[in-house]
Length: 223
Image 1: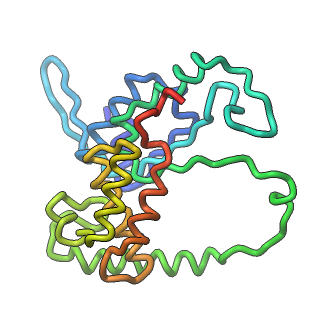
Image 2: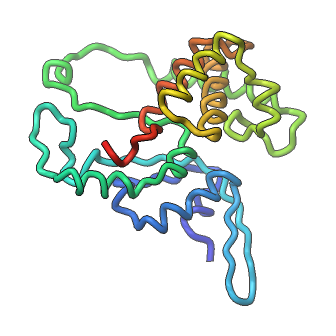
């Protein structure tokens, strides 16, 4: 029977409290996120389902939820925190394009009534970026957005210049990023450039994309 992964095809799969899932279940996500198909093998048959979905997840920094919070005391031991974080493996993190750590807002910032950008304006900008991508991939079957680019397409449409390469090299070395993370950064940078209506991926697009991989570091699960 089709499960949640394939039922999310062309939609969103959202996992709240990600480390609370069984680790084996989380590792099963690796192939679908990479290949956009899931293959289920049984003794007498093998079935392949499509599963091109957007994976969204959220988690606390530790079991009690207060690790790194300057306003609350964390009651977890270092071992508990490490076990909690290590349930999210490096290979799984590699396949998540955007990773952001969110710090609690103090009341003085939370209570501010500043007006943000209207959702209608954001929607218009996103639609323009998607139309750019639709035009870019019109000659490529089953490719509709930057996230679906192959490695060859990345070299064709998101090749960084010398300045961008230098920024990428320093990030790869200091954060100990993988080759897969390198490709993911370029895909995100290409999307940022599209939102900026820029035909070329520039250094500041690369820098912003690197900033969205705050969890993808060599010390994950050991902090």
